[in-house]
Structure formats: C-alpha cells, structure tokens
Length: 101
Image (cartoon, rainbow, N blue to C red; front, side, top):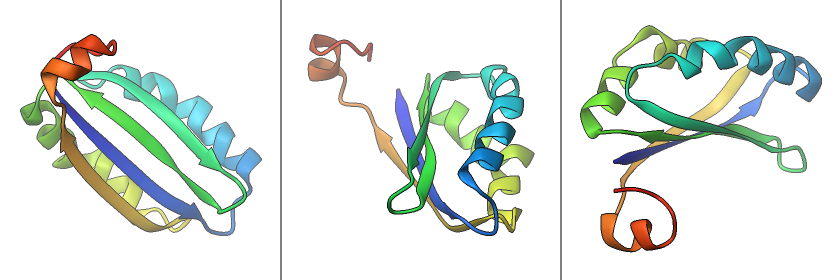
C-alpha cells in the first residue's frame, strides 16, 4: 500500500467554491483504479487544502501521477504551492491500528 499526500493553497477562489468543485469531482476520484480512499483536507486558517490518498500499490499511485487528473492539479491556477509526497505504508503496525497492508 502507498499513501500520497497532496497539499496546496487556494488562489482567488473561496473555500465554498472549492468545496463545490470537490463535490463534483468526488465520483471521478472514486472510480480511479487502485485508489482505496481519498480523504479531502481543509485548514482554512492556513489556507491549506488537499487530500490523503490511500493506494492499493505503488503502481496504481504512479499510474495516477502519470495521468490527466494529477496533471490538472498543478495546472489549475486556483491551486498554488502544490506539493505531492508519497509514502510506503508500514504493513505490520498499520494492520494493528486498522489499516490493511
């Protein structure tokens, strides 16, 4: 399993407008092959938003990162200071605390 954490700041868009777009996009993310879950993040105080993506495998995550949806995040002028960091899930203790590995 792999986790991808994407963070960014909103630029010239309100949180309400952003959440409206998120609502529209959620079904698209739900259909991405190999994506187990996406948790949508918001910290209005620091203007930091993003998502935590849980992937079945590194290959599924890499396929997403090579695709159009991922590219559109960096190309969207309403999203600035984009960072994307991936992590391997440590299977043993993660299984103990409720995440399969």
